[in-house]
Length: 297
Image 1 (cartoon, helix red, strand yellow):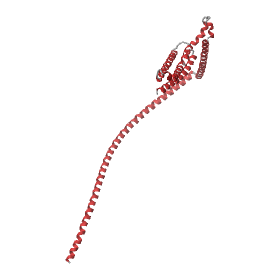
Image 2 (cartoon, helix red, strand yellow):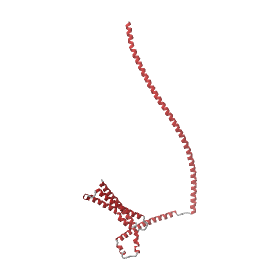
Image 3 (cartoon, helix red, strand yellow):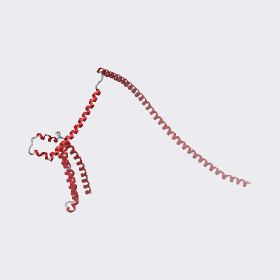
Image 4 (tube, helix red, strand yellow):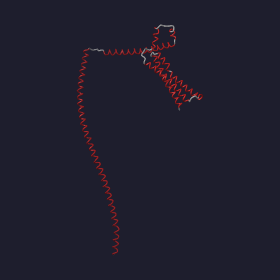
């Protein structure tokens, strides 16, 4: 279980450092175009190291997996952990170094260092400096300087176009806002507008007072309606209480009527039983009387 987990962690670190490498290379190009050549060279050396460290760690893990059965110095899990910790520490160190350089770049307030070769012609030359044009580093600096100047020219051209457009808009607005009438007529029209606005404001104030009076009247009506509503609610509750009382009384009367009906039915049944018993008692007495009359004859 530990071996697949370590391999998965290593693959994840490889992917993360690869993503960071692509982002950092783009950032190095951005720093280079902004004219900070020395810083871009430092960042260029560091940007690819974390991914390379993780790649070397991956190769080391493969070697451990292949050669561990023959060596058998430590267990394979311990060796894999040690290799993973070493590559993580090395990658973390270089990443922190890169972040430190970026922090230094963000706090820079000086001019870009790519402009220094422009002033090299003003300095006294020597026999050593005569061969500087054949140095690859100097040619790289000159190429970076050309790129920086090209970016500056592009930015300045865009800024000039933007300023020209703003200037043309300003001229059009000034031309459109230039008064074509007499100042006295303009003041008279403004005075008339102010008077109209003051009259309209007075009318609005009067309408506002009228609206406030209507609102107060409506509030009093609402209060009166609320009082009537409360009275209706109380009356409704009282009627509901009376209705509930009458319903309980009606239920009691229905139960009493039902009990009376049941008792009447019981009485009728008892009466019928008594009638049947009396008829049964009378029927045997009739033959005895007839036999006695026959004996007398």
